[in-house]
Each structure stands twice: as structure tokens, then as C-alpha cells.
Length: 290
Image 1 (tube, rainbow, N blue to C red):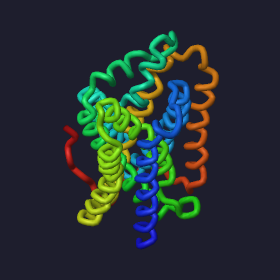
Image 2: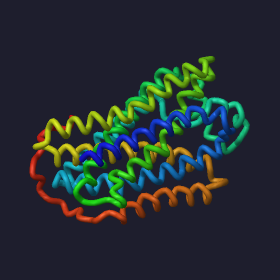
Image 3: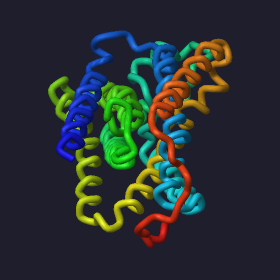
């Protein structure tokens, strides 16, 4: 177990650094709408593949029921959907893109236009909850991989990669809105650092919960995996589906990048020993999903 905690610390450290780097991106390179869509296609495909190939099958294995797995997955998907609807935080890209691309007939206008009307505090709050859930997903994936083997003992590698690649996109949303509101770079860095630390907090809370309820370990891991799988599906499709109408001119490139992300998730999953037979778990978690 010490190795597991060390790996978790390494993962969390890299995710924090990636998030901080994402907050600095608008000042370092010119983030056009096209570049953002290319990044989102790869990361969206990766998250979609992880949800389908990794989280949901392993959740069914631990819960011993496909039906219960889908109940928890639906809960995760709906929670993320309503968080996005309430806080409008899933608007990736710097605010300046709206001004640069306003005359672009292929530009997806509603996202940047809405971003200008949003408070950065609402966006930051929504993304903080989203990142906390990411941390829970990371902890659950690592626990699921313990005992069944993982490539180079990198437990939870798929989930870690998805979070690592997605956090810079989230950080751009927060810091660019703060910059548009006239906040100093120091305050932007402070808020971005607090946002980045939510992922380690979520992972730590999950590990504490599993440690305190060891007799329900299988049920907790299964429920968390299924819930996180629903969250990953919502996030990935929320990134990918709106762009189908607006990017017909470069659909081949974006589709290829989407397939690349899905292929990476599938390839990593194939490196693990497979035993996804649904069985009755040793302990049940009789918590109704509201």
C-alpha cells in the first residue's frame, strides 16, 4: 500500500502542475478555436473510451449487477449535466476567442458569447466540484486496479491520463474569464492553484472513505466507478456533440483525433488482466440512489 499512496501523490502532483500550466497557456501561446477543438477531440475520445472500456465494466464486476451499475452511472451523468446547466462552466477556451472568431461562419458562437456573460466565480465553483469528482474517480480507478494488476504497476493509469489532459482546458476557462474581468495575474494564479488542489482532495477523501468502511470496499469502489463513468460520458459528449454541426469543414481531422483518443483508452485497457465476469460482491452497499 505505501507504493499505492506514493503513486497517488505523483499523479496528484502532475495533475496540479498540468492545471497550473493550463492557466498560463493563454499568455504563452495563441489558443485559436481550431486548436482548442483538436485538443478537445483527443481528450473527449480518451474520456469516452475510459468510461466505456474501463469504468463501467469494472463497476459491474465489483457491484455484481449491471442494473445497479447503470443506476449509479445515470446518477453521475445527470449530476454533471445539471452542474453544467446551473453554472455553465464547461465553456473551454479563452474569452478572447469570441472576439477573434466572431466572423467565422464555422465558429460555435454560443459558448464564447455565453462565457462573456458569466461570473468567473460561478465557473470556478462548478469546475471545482467537477474536479473534486475527478479526484474521486481517480481514487476509485486506482483501488479497482489493485490486486488485478496494471501495466508497470501504474494503477488507475487511464483515469489519470484523462484528468491530466483535461485539467488544462478547465483552467483556461477560469483564468481567461478572470483576465477579462481585470484580475491580476497573482490572483489568477491563486484561484487556479485552489482549483487544481480539488483533485487531490477528492482522491484523498475517497481513500479515507474506503479505509473507514473496509467491509464495504467492493461496493464503494463499484459505485464510485459507475458514478464516475457516467460523469466521464457526460463530459466527453458535452465536449464532442455540440461541435458536429459547426465543424463540417474539418470533420475528418477532428474525427481522426477522436478515434485516436478512444484508441489510446482501448490500448491501455488491453494491457490489464481481464476478469470482468459479474459476480455477487462480498459486501453490498444498500444506499438508494436518489
